[in-house]
Amino acid sequence: MALLLVWILNAVALLIVAYLLPGIVVTSFWAALVAAVVLGLLNAIVKPILLVLTLPVTIVTLGLFLFVVNALVFWLGGSLFEGFRVNGFWWAMIGAILYSLISSFLSGIAAS
Figure (cartoon, one colour):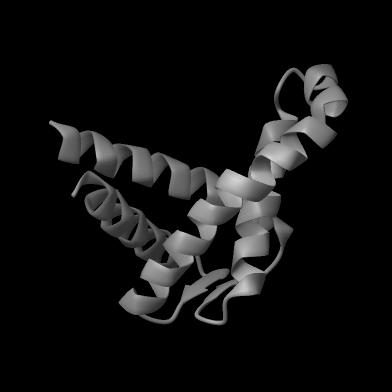
């Protein structure tokens, strides 16, 4: 049940990000649900591989390169599914940060 709640909250967070940023487009709530699954799978499979490959750069930049890795994963998610689109790297950077903040906020509210 908790997994279902987190999935819906992530979809809502994605809809909020799309509403706030003109460079990110989500066509419907169902598209947001699918995009949340796609982003979750990318974060579980692709992101750890990218973290290992970019470890030297991450160490040199004192962890700031993780923002770039998050943006690339967010951007990749936008290119894999038609209902979710990200219009460029900088929109992906801002969107990934905002998505993370909103998702954490909503999960915190739901946990209490």
